[in-house]
Image 1 (tube, rainbow, N blue to C red):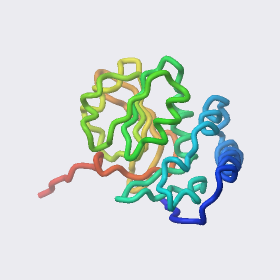
Image 2 (image 1 turned 135 degrees about the vertical axis):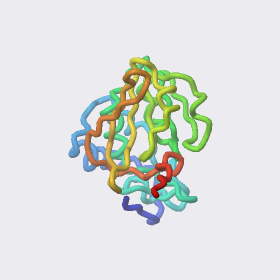
Image 3 (image 1 turned 90 degrees about the horizontal axis):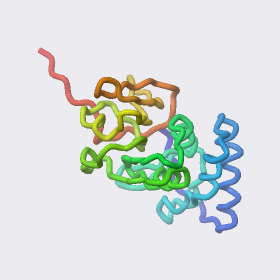
Length: 201
């Protein structure tokens, strides 16, 4: 994952223009064309979710460093997630975030109920949701994750496979989650979902 650091500060008018340019040059050209999803990106100021010193790079087509190892994924990654998720107004959405705030704000424009919990928090007690979005890539799929996805719900996340991050859509099958890899995508791996060490003799 390429992370952009700092650039000169820009005005609110410039940010609005950058948000529109992001939609046209990053999202639309990559197949993100759903009108409701694009409206969500237009309505949510991405610069509000990065540190003051990095607001000038909020709309770059790269991840933005947030500090303490956290990053804000590229807008295209979130566009891919929401396109795969196909959120609807009556969805109950759980965003498991690191940091997750921007993704949750986008989801709030598309669904009636959105809950944000930290990736290293007690998300397993969040109850069942029709849509679960994980803001990052996971190596290990804990059994408890199936407990927060409703029987007819879906999960959208990044997965790490042999060092490459990809977008995946999950459904609950027989009480467990079955993930289908959809495409390569630019996710930051989540330490809270790292693969457990394997012992060999």
